Image (cartoon, rainbow, N blue to C red; front, side, top):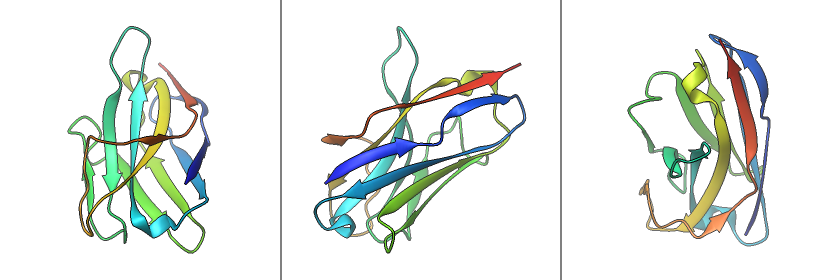
Amino acid sequence: VQLQASGGGLVQAGGSLRLSCAASGRTFTDYAVAWFRQTPGKEREFVAAISRGGKRTDYANSVKGRFTISRDNAKNTVYLQMNTLEPDDTAVYYCAARTTVTGATPATGYDIWGQGTLVTVSS
């Protein structure tokens, strides 16, 4: 499967953005999908994950209650709705996929990565 992330941009603190991750290639429902983010000089950080069928999700504590991950398997797309954005959310956001068992929302082991999309939150 190949991944294409989009939707980044510049937003003021307190605002919202929705990122999209469009997949092509092999059967999308074979894969859990996650979002990660990275800022210069820091390691890539797990943000959120969604299971193959979309019924289970997991979030980093730093975004819990503000971000929502979802997927539309008919459209081979995963979304990250980001609300109440903070300057500390500024980063390049990446979507990633991995095969896994049904219902799992792993935070590691992703081996397929899309290109990043830049999110900048101004104070």
